[in-house]
Image (cartoon, rainbow, N blue to C red; front, side, top):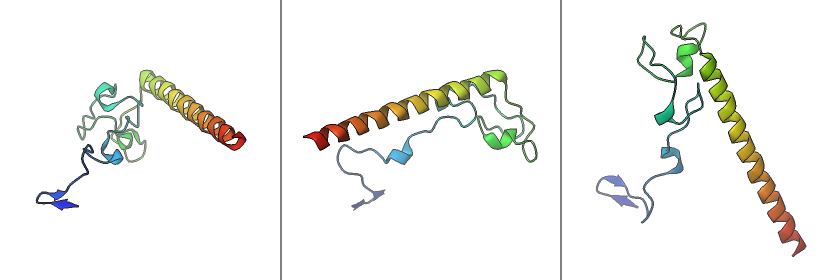
Length: 97
């Protein structure tokens, strides 16, 4: 469906799932809680390319950034595992019914 301003979403839909902000690739936190410093070279915050040792801008990850990414990754993995277990249990229940 297309409106005068381009694509129109169905009622109750304000965008696509890809419109959501992703967590920071460096510290793993949501964009509004990112703990990464702004790059003095390009002004970006949380850009992994700024930390690249060969082509980057010389930024070095702090221990807090490294620990934050580890903790956030652990949370995502636990959530994914719990979701997988839920769906497997649900599939087993449906198979028994």
